[in-house]
Image (cartoon, rainbow over all chains, first blue to last red; front, side, top):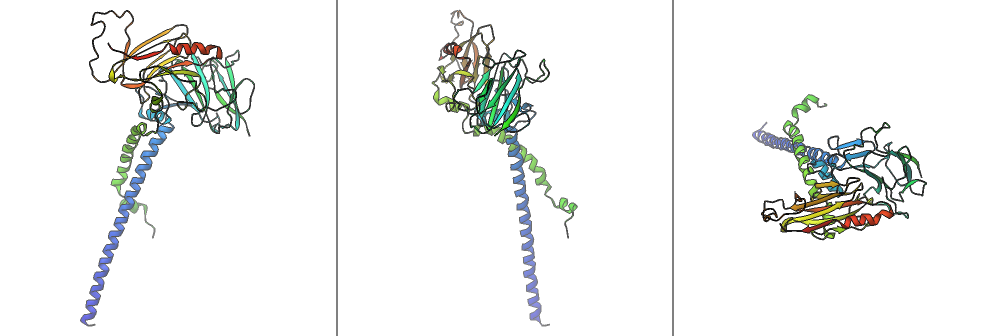
Length: 222
Length: 194
């Protein structure tokens, strides 16, 4: 083996060493970038998704629930928590403070199925002990549903109540006897049950047993 | 050769793993507090352009396609006053009839109820409030200080710079509607001086 062969072998080793170092540095850089990408992804998903969920749906800290009804416990209050503030700012509504009123909203029936205008529903309830209440049907964006009889809500002053204090409202596209609320072809629906006089809690059991929040029963779908 | 779990844990970047929930928490708090300011149209910004300043305005009945706000129930008629106390206090007066369902509320631009009153069945509820600026400012001498008797119950002072006063009258059966409208017309809102 001559000196030329030794030189060639040594330069090859140097090149190999350089490439090996470069490869190691590249792997380290890729690992670091991967770690940071995972970090940023996790922060965005955890931070934004949890915020969005707590603003949109609420939690036990901010809402009271009796399926399918949900009410935000500090709506409209000056000392409202930031989730409640953000929820109603996003909805774009002017809420009455929960010191004088409560609004319960339902997007599903009592079995958890989404309310839809292609289905008929019975809303069975008993008159709450509050001084005034109303039940209004909206489409899912909070707009009223146009109908020929121009009926969008029943209140404690306009609903027909049975002698025992109970009532049934029928939610249907076509006219129904009794307390009928037309739903037209609105698609997904939202029901809002509002009570004034927050001193008379609606979620606590009434004389007859259950709470005064109405039950929403699906009758049939087309 | 498969990488062992212990090797994976040993090689994990624990600084980033611990920092992730902390950073997510900070982002969660910032996003939640920023959300009201990032909404396209708050209730105040939707209503304000259509309401005269410091004057009570009775809104048309809420009907499909003419809803000033989402989820605004047509079970009531509304009178609203957009107020701005930067030029002086604003006096608000109303007489809530002895029927259930009437309310008078003062909302901040963020929707908080700065003041709320509800009617009591069987008893008339007079409401007299003065909206004063939130900032420290000399508002003039009160009638008592000037030796002038008010002759009426002194108004309740509510601190607010801008916002909307809402008087809500339950929209009963057809025969009751003139009565509801008369009740809303009783509500007044005007700039005043001490």
